[in-house]
Length: 257
Image (tube, rainbow, N blue to C red):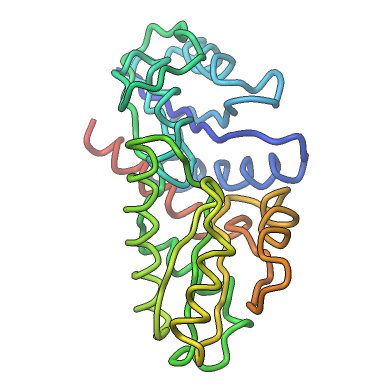
């Protein structure tokens, strides 16, 4: 057996987005528990020459016989996570059929789980909004994520968001926690509801996105235009918590196998 690890993230046209992901993967791969095992950072789309099949090919050329596929995505409610799994031969989670086809792979594939609810990520989010919080006992934290309208996937998104939001609330000592998805469009409605139900609490909006980009810079502020809230648009990268999450998932699989 020769293990190898294929990390898959979405991909972006922004070079900085790709760089931040690569740096996190490289740092995790250099940790003592992973060092020496081939690790490749690949992308679902856009980043030509670094797509999933490219990563499979590179690792198998190095003699990898057992491949740990680690989706660096926010939620198991992501349809991308499911369609990637389908392309590796896993059954679909719902009736939604992916369009990636089937990957060419000879190695034994072990498919990991995305971030979902995680204590390190809650600490990351708390550090991101530290400057926005003055009196947490009088503040509500509201996570905003991409989300999904699709049956099964919507429920998975909601479950993970609720757990992570409550973890963040307890960790920071906030009065209340809430969540909203961009798909379906819930953000403005949720902020209005919070301000009506809890008028004495400031709303801190926490974006749950891997890296800064169109959603954090444009979509969220546009959806919430005219509303009273606190927001700095800080994404999850760069932050050592992502490196720790990657390292933990990689090391756990290596120890099990």
